[in-house]
Image (cartoon, rainbow, N blue to C red):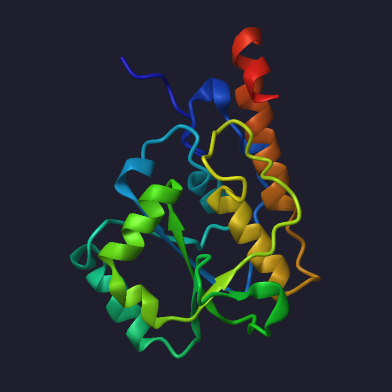
Length: 197
């Protein structure tokens, strides 16, 4: 029997985060290309992102065929499109002028899954790529990552919005993530929790 979930945030009722959610509007159009393995992941930050920024678009898939509708949507848009992904050809978002009315594409998955998404979708490489200059480690301590420059998708979105417009208040995003991390840590046995501190 499945655990009862909150009808609003869709997290289990004993892990409801509604009290920590403050919605916000942004000028950038956010599109998340999500690896299918992330959809049901309990520690997936995209669900939280959608609660804070409700007009976030999430497209689940792996192959070019999975993103046919999205590709048509992007082709018809008049807005500039950027892929947020660090590569040999990416440019620092902090050192380039990016319009506020822009479409930002994010790959949601582990580093390995995100790289696989990129390889299976060469059409993504037609868009200019942006990366973030990281001066601090991720606050998403409840999910282990193989690389020191790993961020949750929510953190990447928050940092990118701040890079585009330094006056942008990203506290609703960072506060929601902190609440989720603290809630998850509090529910762990003490010996398990110690591994994440």
